[in-house]
Every structure is written in structure tokens, then in C-alpha cells.
Image 1 (cartoon, helix red, strand yellow):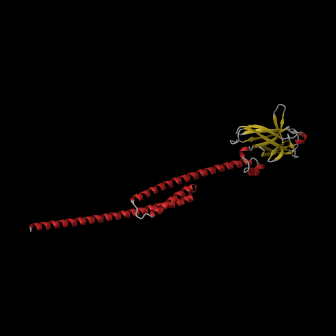
Image 2: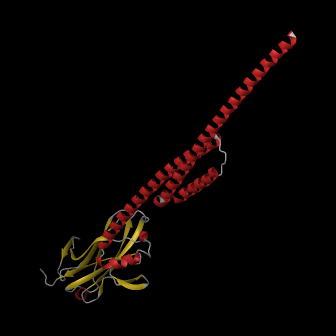
Image 3: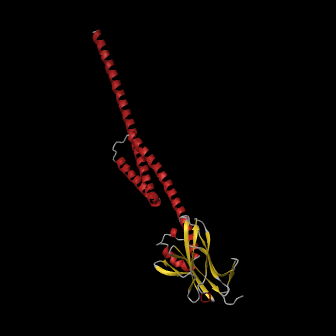
Length: 301
């Protein structure tokens, strides 16, 4: 009888211990379930945060495509990558911390790329503005040079599209007047046609860093008030036509500004040197590059 009583007590103890174990296991399982639910909620929130960041980035890149056109292709490529990531995140039914971490690295890389592209676009825009400013400055200088050749202004605008400017030297500071060359070689200016022995035409050849240095030849054509070409009366071809010239000069051009003077003697002074206005044209490389005029008066003194 005593043995049976002991067995019964032992059984009761085992049942009690088993009940406690089951309760503990149930509590532990319930606690684990609650932790899992909390973790899933956190992961869901982080997923939403990732989607929000990706959508904000997409908006940034959309704005950049409109404002930063200098690198639009790069922005377009990054935008396509963002759209693909958004779709990928949406399809994730049960996301993990590892996957979220991967997306967060992608977002960080896309933000860094966005900042670099913004800087690159701003740099390219600044460089472009500098080029525009330089171009405007060059155009202004070109217009100033063309003003020296009043009678050639319209023609220069047409020629600028069809000829290589580097091969043509357009002179500036063009002057022409009658001169008397004394037996000593001294040159004296005169406005009287009876005292003049020559016509002197002077001009400045501008600096040109593109044209190769070497011999360059300039021609002048002087027409007196009666329409006669005075001087040597040789002919040259200019733009497909043969024209009569008065004189020429060979100069050694070394890619820097150079003053040139050409003296023209009449074939017949009595017929060539008369009172009135004279027209002077200058030619270089078969192109008319400058014009001026002057007058000779009557009388001797």
C-alpha cells in the first residue's frame, strides 16, 4: 500500500512539471510570435520608406531631365534604374532585412550619382556660357574690323560664309595721298595734282596667328576722276575676272602687324594726274580686301 502511494505522488509531480513545461513553451512560442509580428511590421515600414525614397528620387530625376539638359542621357539611364527598383520592391511579398539593406545601398548610390550629375551639368553649363561670351566678343571684334572697310561691309558678310578667312589679310588704317619724291629721296605729301609725282597708298596688315609666315603680295588699283586706271596697268584675276591694277608690293609676313606702303607712278602725268577725287582698291590673294579715296586739288601752291 505504501508503494502505491509513492507512485501516485511521483505521477502527480510529473504531471505538474509537464504542465509547467507546456505553459512555459506556450508562453515562449507566443512571445516569439509577437516578436516576429513586430519585426515584420518594422520591415514593412522600412519597405515603405524605401519606396518613398525611390519615388522622391524619381521626381528629382524627372526635374533634372527638364533643367539639366546637358547630361540628360545620364539622368535618363538613372531614372530607368529607379523605376525598375520601385517595381522590384513592390513585388517583394515578404521582405528581409538583408534585402532592405541592399535597396538602401542602391538608394545611396543613386543619390551620390544624382549629386555628381548636378555638378557636371552645372560645370558644362558654365563652360558653355563662357564659350558664348567669348564668341560674342570675337563677333564684336570682327564687326569692328569690318567697319574699316566701309564699302566692303555687305560683301564681307557674304564672303565670310564662303572663303577661308585664314588665307585673307584684311588691311586697316588705309590712307592714300599725292606725294612728291625729291631727288634726295625725301617724300613730301601734297594735295596739288601738278606737284605730285606719285600716289602713295599705305595700310596696316593685321596680326594673324593662323596664316603661315612667308611672302605675301598686295596689289592696288587707283582710278582717277576721269575713270582711267593709272600706274603699271598690269592685270590680275579677281573672283574670276581680269582687272587692271596700278602697282603691287611683296612683303615678308611674320604673323604680326605690319605697315605697308605702295608707290604708284603715272604712265602719263598730264593725263593721269588731274583735279578731282581718286578711288583706291586693295587686293590680296585674288580678293578685294580694302578701299579708300582721296582728292587732288588744282593750283601749284
